[in-house]
Amino acid sequence: MNIWGFMIVKDEADILGQTIESLLRYGGFSKIFIFDNNSKDDTFEVAQRFASDRLSVSKLDETYSDDLKYEMVYRHSEIFSHSDWFAILDGDEIYTESQTQVIEFATTHNFNCIEHNTAQFYFTEKDISLDFDRSKPAAEQRPYYLLNYGEPRIFKFSEGLRLNTTQVKGRSPLLKISPRKLLIYHFQYRSAQQLEKRLRNRIENNKSSNNWGHVRSSRLDDYIVPAKHLHRFNGTITAGLPKNSNLYKIRDNAAYTMANLNWLKKNDALTKEQLTFFLATKWQRLLRKIW
Image (cartoon, rainbow, N blue to C red; front, side, top):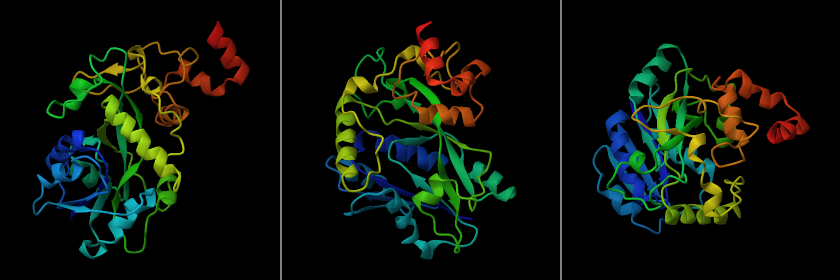
């Protein structure tokens, strides 16, 4: 069995080194393919420093879309054999545990798809600085998080199945999803400068693809989450919301979107009291918010 990794990356130079180090440590990859998608920073040069027989780096001059991630996999279909797996990687997602063990579990139990268990780290009012030092561990600089998201990212290769975004995001019945997930750390909010560039790239890309239709605001303040609504990283990850989190009282923010809350609900990560939020009407929510 081989495990192949595929990453399309743009303007992630500040975090990419930490990401690649984690992939090489925990991924068990036979090879990782990194495609630089017209970065304006030194992303390509950072990736090149890791180039080896286990990691290749090339430039990709194509307009990004979610489907392009899968297209790059199938452009390399000649390397696959029947028992192989592949992973869709992101430049700001750090592996934290053995991918091989998670795949072995899925293989043993006849699953062909594995989801990420994603701890997302956020800006808060307690951050000492909104700068980011690429030489220091990301979790030391952005220590506040919620385990509040996950999507299918690791797949068993099949000649009769050509994946696309619609199938994956829709959890097609063709995907037999393993109950055992792979824990990763997602650092999409790292510095004020990085976030500004990230939002600008996504808003520009939306003109042709609407890949990030949910991205509306370009104001930094809209991405700062009150620390009391998050967990603080201490070397391990805590599931669920902080104790006594009241969904009726918490204002909308980057960590508590309905997509995030629905994921928490689906994964049994909410208390009975928190679950009543989903059953309440608009007026009931308003009354509970006031009183």
